[in-house]
Length: 114
Image (cartoon, one colour):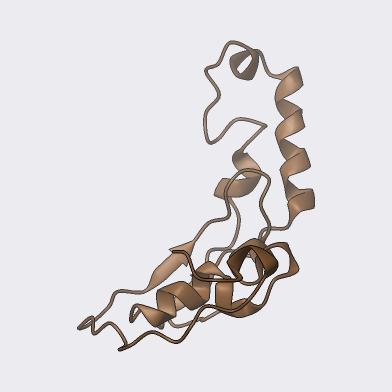
C-alpha cells in the first residue's frame, strides 16, 4: 500500500470501509529469517498502524498471533557450519540449524499477540 508520508512513518489514512470477511480464520505469523516479532507489529520503530498486524486487522483478520521469535534466536542457524547436510544444502527442519524453530512454542488461536 502507498499513502502520502508513508516513508516518513506517517500512519495510513483510515480505510473508507472495513473489509468484511466472514469468519476470518486465525492468522499465525512465524517471523522470517532474521526477523523479530516486533517487525510485524511496529516495523523499524514506526507506528503500529503501519505494521502487518494492523494491516490484517483493517482487512477483518482480528485473531492474529505472532510466534515469539527474537532476532537473537537466529544465531542458532550458525550451528549448520558443523553439519555436513547443511553444508551440502540438504538441511532439514530437525537438523542442528533449524530444530530450535521446530520446537518453538506456537501460539494457539485466540492468543492474540500484538
